[in-house]
Length: 127
Image (cartoon, rainbow, N blue to C red; front, side, top):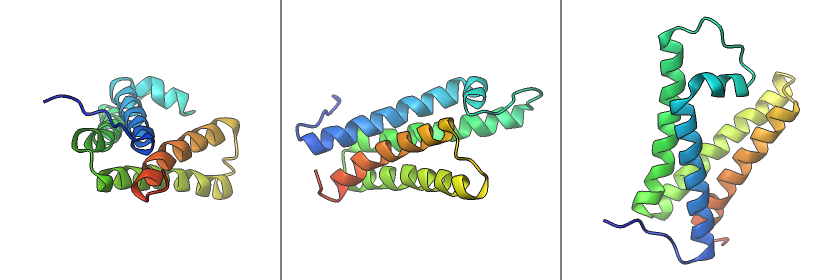
């Protein structure tokens, strides 16, 4: 089986978004302590269950990004875009209710918007 790389620009953009999601998921999966510190958590006494939860979230991001890459179907790109977009929406809610309007939070929000926009634009036929 060979890896399929799309020829259309819109699908290439969606593919890059899925690939970036896989890489971020692997980063979360393999380096949970560093990712928690990067996300502004104070990592001290973390029980194994805590690291397990973070690693599980990383594995879910990895799998969510791998599905459209491996199966190359519009529906999987749409699911990826919706899931990452829902994460961006959650961060937007945090801006309002948690006083989370910080540079780090806004940066991650913008990254999530960009990662969601490519797959959604492709799935809905805008690119």
